[in-house]
Image 1 (cartoon, rainbow, N blue to C red):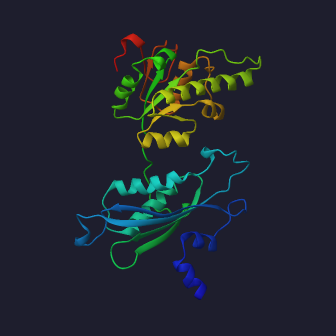
Image 2 (image 1 turned 60 degrees about the horizontal axis):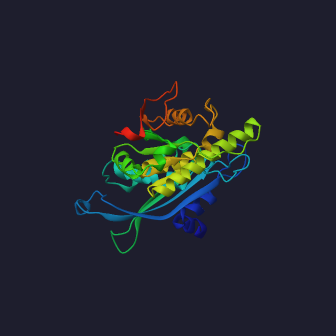
Image 3 (image 1 turned 45 degrees about the vertical axis):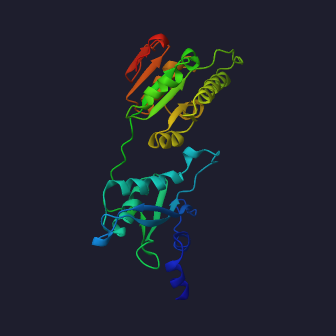
Length: 310
């Protein structure tokens, strides 16, 4: 009995461990956790809780399927902690709620949209309603989600391809100023620098070298404007778009990992950028100082460096 009482008030990670099922292949489930994540919101059913904010604290544990094969230190293969905090932020922004129980259920169900997630333990506590913490804790599994949770709509970013002449232009910061004012997230693509790359005579290794040359230029652009952040994974890209970050695409990982990869070779950098724009469902792509490819799946617009009008 004393053990049961202790577990009733233990951190969700201990409760998860005590009640852990095995995965489909018989192996124990892995866990990720978020501890003492505190936000200030308006919530509550009582009149005294209306028109004012209060602190609420989240402790969340998510049981996930163990990865098969090596992780390779690859953030796109795991369930990122950001997805947990984003689930909380999304549900808090949807509407004002009266009950912690409603909020906990919605957060759990949104987390369980993630393909790796198996069970979610969510504890939420009000910190300002008395001398102690008042809260609820729930556990939900994929098989117990009782209503559909709407998928979060992905943004349709605006993309800009910058030629080497554009990157070197004194007008670069001004163009980024104008592009940054648009309502949609901004992603910038570049080509390789105007320097000879090593030649291997071998298609696979040459492809990697040419992709890395593009990444060198991405870092050169980031050095010219501190607002530009180089990203190489979908996880980084999704986070950047949601947090108003100007992303500069480093293509190697996404291109090499793509199941249905681009037909364009890295030397056809505008066509490669257009493939990426279609992959992430960009609304359009502006090409500054370079020719357009013959075909593209997204609307393209080309302007010269001398006549840029955004």
